[in-house]
Amino acid sequence: MSATKTRLDNSTTPQTAARFEPANSLTLAIMVTLAIVVSVRETALIVCSALGYASAANIVGMMTLLIALLICRFTIGLPHWLTQASNVLLLESGFAFLPVSAGAGLLVFGLGDELWGFIITILISTMLPLWGIAKLANLWLSTHDRTTVKPKPSKPSKLSKSPKSSSL
Image 1 (cartoon, rainbow, N blue to C red):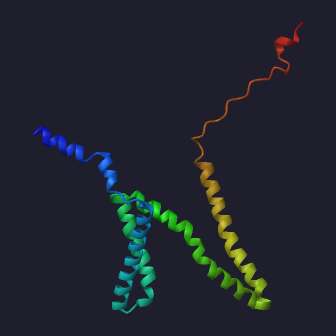
Image 2 (image 1 turned 135 degrees about the vertical axis):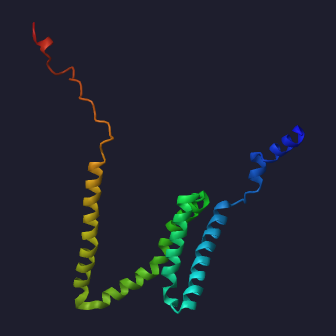
Image 3 (image 1 turned 180 degrees about the horizontal axis):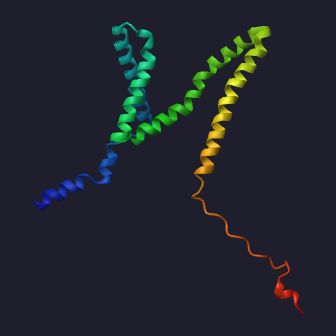
């Protein structure tokens, strides 16, 4: 009986567990993450098309995935591979917006006389929320910054006159 137990314990050593991991686990994690996203979106498209609201499939898919991930996070926790793969995908997804940004830039310069009004509107609608968020963050940080250690008062330097050294 002890030989069986020893054989079972030896079969779950880290060396054999590492043998079952794929060589490039990040690539596999990215592929599985993309498969999850695509399957949720396509399922939402099928459901929304059946209900007659095919144009709402993207937002329904995003909300469904968000709710599912929140439930998973607060119940069993998100796996590390999913977090790592989504971080990589988010960092690299900025390149997907380059063609859209270039096209929007070309269209903006076609506004002619309305260009300055458009730029001022964009600046105000961007800067006011950022300013408000900065004020709120500053307020929150100043009220929650009570855990820091206050510096000790500095000792007088040797060059400064002390009452003891002034008497001759």
